[in-house]
Image: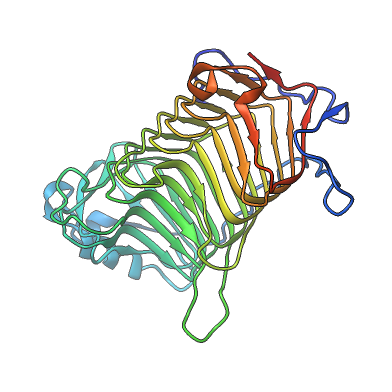
Amino acid sequence: MKRRAAGGATASARRGFLGRVLGLATATAAGGAWLSIAPPAAAATRARGRARIDVREHGARGDAVSDDTAAFQAAIDALPEDGGTVHVPSGAYLIDPTRSVRLRSRMHLAMADGARLMAKANAAPRAYVLFAEQVQDVEISGGRIVGDRDTHLGETGEWGHGIRIRGCGGVTVRDIHISRCWGDGISAGGIMTKGQRSRPGRDYVFENVTCTRNRRQGLTIGSSRRVRIRGCEFSNTAGTPPAAGIDIEPDTDIARDILIEDCLVFGNRGPGIQLYKRAAEVRIRRCTIERNRGEGILAVTGVDCVFSDNIIRNNHRKGVLLRGGSRNIRLAGNRFEGNDQGRGGKQQVQVADDSVAVGIDADNVFE
């Protein structure tokens, strides 16, 4: 991982994972089978053609003044049927999020390190700089997205996102910095059409992404299957609740098979990481979760989850709080320090009475 808070990482290997369990709640026969921590699966290669198109060839100016939304869309639409790469050179590109740059299947939006997509000021409660809906095999990499939080013309809504991914299959977002959005840095989930069954998103990968100083969340994960979040930073979210670094909160269906590893989550006004109802098989490991105003990890009705080898420290509320009927949750090899307004000790972890089959391994450290 490229970023680590002072104090270093936890040991890479789990120590005594099958050792003695300290029960904060009794593991019942109905829910007492602990999950093992499987190695992460490699991200699938995103299929696309060899065509390469430069947004400047379609009229993008990159001068921070001209509206480049149409030029970006023209470059994407010019890709052949088998797709390809749309290149964005260095520059400041003004994008109208009420229109969005709409991504297509089998494409890579490849931004140079010096490329910035700047959200045009607007009053819309719901608007996205980049929008991917029901497409396959998409990659977004490089550059920066800067939202319109400081220039937003309205006061309502919380859905002004840097990137919105909805009902897609196979999306990778990597090596990008997203900040100052009216809503989330990234929101990724499924889609529900009236009169039809919910369609979850599948195979989402986020690597070396920084989401900072956004208004609602750093990253929201909605209805989805198989999400991998690696080596990312989610920090300093504040402005409207939940204000979490990462919020796993499916509006419909469930979010299942989520891996968060080697991430830095700090300074958020709400929880560092929140699992809010219908979140299952969530693994959080080797992360540093610190200085959040809410809990380090808050799970409401989390099911079949493992939190291991994390540093969880100096969060204003509990290091880990489990409630809402959470069940089959295991904590192993974590280091807790100075949470719950600095009270320390084992009270840094709290399990509500309605949670069952929760275990704290003996290798957790409480300071």
